[in-house]
Length: 276
Image (cartoon, rainbow, N blue to C red; front, side, top):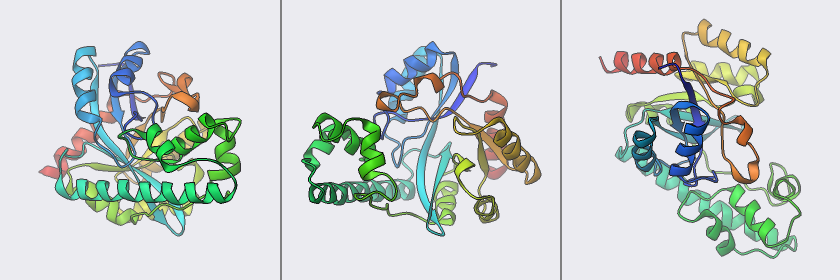
């Protein structure tokens, strides 16, 4: 198998635009053969995507993206090959989805005090049955005519440090690593390009399995740097487009930012070693 491997995508079960079926079709169209679906705090898309993947000749890797916190910095952790239905993992994911809803309600309350006419029902309409996130709030603001663009919603109101911003409830990275490991999975630092090297070193010391080396936000120099760290510390590598679709306007990344099957095989070998 020599096709493209994209290990970081999102569906409408979190903050992605496309359904699992639509994502599979788009992946097929750009030559992706292995697709990691990593919705935020949600594994609900995996079974559906796996079935459609079989129809289109695409292997789906079960994944999830979890938010953690280290020294007041939000750190995203990608988990791969987790056991679907694992009770402890599901308990945490349900908790964080509930916290996402509470956070959305607080943000909507702040927006109202700023004079923006929006209700939590407008946000839930955008989220449907997915994990509620700020992108759904931005979409609701745009459709209600409260902002001129999706990006204005973030830059002016709900982005980090903006007047209606609310922090998420987070796990510690160590707790996330344990939950992922106990669910039979592997943990990776997502898009580390934004974090100080000292933080990345702490995550390595804490026991992360790997680093997302390839990401749309990483320059060629950063890719070489993170690959060097992976080799130095005997870690695993991952990579993908972080594709969301819709208002993100990131369609060009799908099929352009990808890794290869050697990366997936290294993951499988590590899992075999862990289970031995």
